Image (cartoon, rainbow, N blue to C red; front, side, top):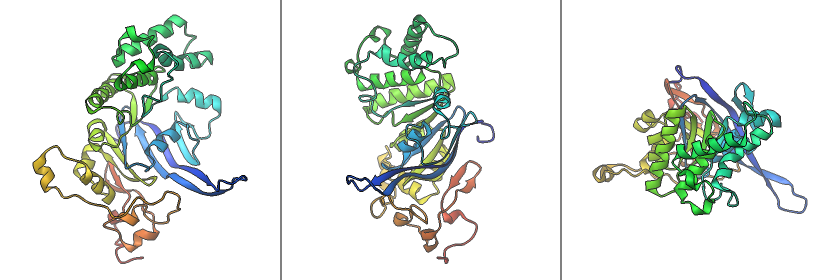
Length: 343
């Protein structure tokens, strides 16, 4: 897959540290939350790349850093040969036209004082006013585009003058999707877009995203807690833990052959709909809690909870080892050298 597809977005050594202050009158930084701590991956054109991991692992921070909603502490985000981390405001605004977001909570991501039509039209109006569209759009063209988008995401055009509180959660998320599509982006960053919805509505929104991806060829970075959702919708999967990538693989390969101990534990915790399989399945229970993300680490980030840890892992951060052509894992057990007796 990697050989056939074009890399549309490249993330290199991305860091996002949030400072911790002492809270006094003269605020002094006494540490930092290492939300994202040096990750690298490529995103291929036209794919759905899933990002999975438990709460606090840095999934949402990663895509917000890619979109420059949080200015990264370090690293590069390369899109259209432009490093978004170093781009000036005008260049960033121009490039961000092609990178849009769908937010997790449809209840808080839509302005309650704006009609649905105004919400969907807002990105077009902003870019139109700044001369960043292909031509100067008329009000009629913008209105037609709004109606086209409402129809595409399955919202009745007759509702365009209604306000967000008049819609259900699923309908609000469809409005959010329509807004993200308004500027014809190449990439959409979806931050758990179905986690706040009922299960039956989740399926409808997931199917809509898949249909849009196939019809428009948009690339998606898709975050979810639900491993079944990630397996259903993703072409490839990134597994994160404590701000670090543990494993990257094609979705089917990851679920058939999880290599990292954390991925194995994560998949073993996911419920299976077949009660017979569920009864015989071995569940991996990790010891302890997720460590605090405010400490600098010099070894494997999963060391404290890993059931397969070696002494060597404590003081050496593992690189991404190739398991197969499109499968990488950050675990010393996949190094060709034997580290079991080293410290």
